[in-house]
Picture (cartoon, rainbow, N blue to C red):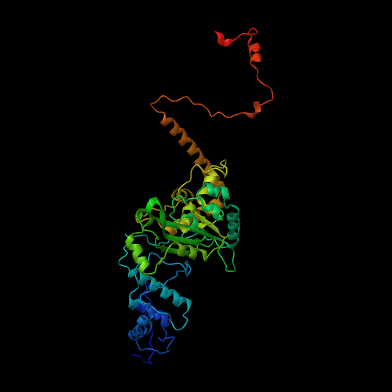
Length: 460
């Protein structure tokens, strides 16, 4: 098969949409129009077929059965995804003849990118059991306004300013408690009850304190939940991104720790079949505790968590965290600035509405469920828009407040339509300004009214 004659590789096909095995072999073994020499064994070959056969025999052999890991799914990071992130959904292992083990030598970055693209293509092509109708597909998401990237580019200087703003806008403990966050000392948390989550408050844990490991200063997260007993919900999918850079940290299924009664496919895009396949392939966290621990690998108690109605996400993660910027609270406080933090907000706006009004984006439109990663990006972009456009936010908030007042007026009129309207009686409040030390006597009142002395008005 091997020969010392040298030949040149085939011309690249400009119309090829995906790298073929032939193209991959030529890219790995040498540039086109040069001798075809293997960088590992340093052998040259006389024709293209010899190169391909050599590549298949040496570099595409599956691992030995003794290792017990021939069916493992390798994690394939993309340029915008950190190594710990997982391309989802992944529910079927790569066929043995497609598996590429670790190379004995260290390939160049260009070779890694080519092999990664080929492996990702093979991975998606090898999943017939997971039809696109069965669940969400990770897609490139639009950024703010007309941006074509998955997230708006933020200059390093602006990142520092945004981080300072986020830290200054973290909600007070009173506000978080009124909006349903489980925070405070253990003795206080144990007396509370999550609004929807199934995790008991005694199992909640505070985010670990600052440690020597570098952490990410701001993280945006979003979760998908499924229904369990007693009308509660548990975690089924977790997405987390670096708020400042937009890099994906986590995008992975979570095996429910309880019996699922309602998969909520319309909203989660998760079914029993998808979850079972993801667990079997190692593409899912074992439970919510493992998902929480993985999230803690990127953060500590000084990290600012950003989310939309984030209290529900923290409930299913069993987390108690106080450095929070909730986009729902942030916008509602702009609409109702007079409501103190000791009272609950009267209304919060949906993320889909804010993304449409602020960013001009249509999200959550798929009939295969919501994408947690898409919602995490949308939440991040909504908060960035609020930071960059305070005057526009003020105008939007004034219009929203006016619409709320008009809605309440219409609701009040329709409530009494066709009925006798009850007489309005204002709430009586005790006026302490009328208090004095003088005693009110009946004789003084009679004298003021002109009654004769000794007159008894009750005698008539």
